[in-house]
Image (cartoon, rainbow, N blue to C red; front, side):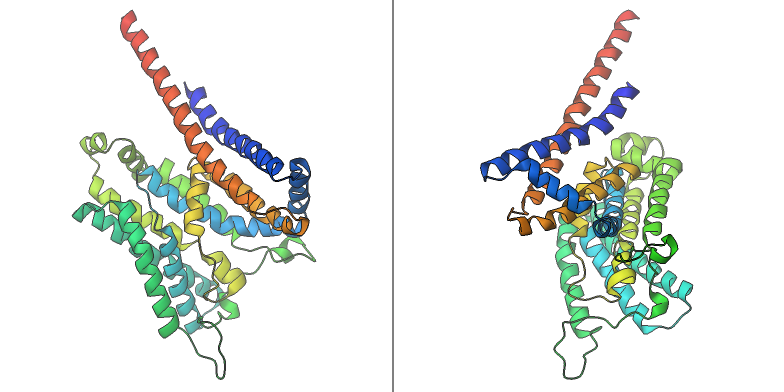
Length: 361
């Protein structure tokens, strides 16, 4: 039976990817494009040195976003508010980081701390509303996304925007000083003539390890998983579902605070209207694809980043790059269906084996 569960984790996403490529092949045929040549173009472009660096840089915030979403999934919560949570944390940490002067290590630590704490408390609102007022977290987090977007726009335009004389630049915070910037890994790895590889990729590895330790190696993680599987059974075992709900949302939000660190300290060095958005929603896709497992989500983040990067060449070849979005959507839809089908298959096998044992007794 354990083998069946392992096969569930392995075969479902593989099946989803195969189906996605199959349907994309049919669609390319229908619009008069050669699917083999199209996929070859994408592959050749995606394996270049610049593309590999870009894929890894894209994967870092995408992976962390998936971790934030996965914490909620493990508790049986659907945290759709990761989007506003990480943007709120990024704005506040960017504004404070630009306003203080500290040694490099303390400066970067302060930025991360502010992002994590502010994101955690913004997520805690949804947890409180669910526990105290019975508001489903899907509704509250969606509404908090809208509220957060409005607050961020107001703060950015009216509080943190430093107007430049005789300038019409878009609202933005001041630039982070050099001490608040995480250096790239190019020099350390001896990489030349390539874009900067974000140094926070190391942070993403530690975040994955921390997520695994919390969820699978601590009593808190056991309570979270138990409550997610059966709240009533977990309650009788001594867990406090209300407390765990708020705590799970805060932990999810805290992880969300890390999402904006890589682009903030490694590329933009400020919060602006062009700051990467949509990562919170993309994290849901990666979490589903990776089955909420740290390694699976890492592979999922790299796969989606590869598709996004490799699709950039298609416009130059007169091939609609929207084929990549279709592939992503099909992968998500197929993997969800595949997981459910295999889950039911395994459950039915368990029931049949249990019935055989009872009958033999």
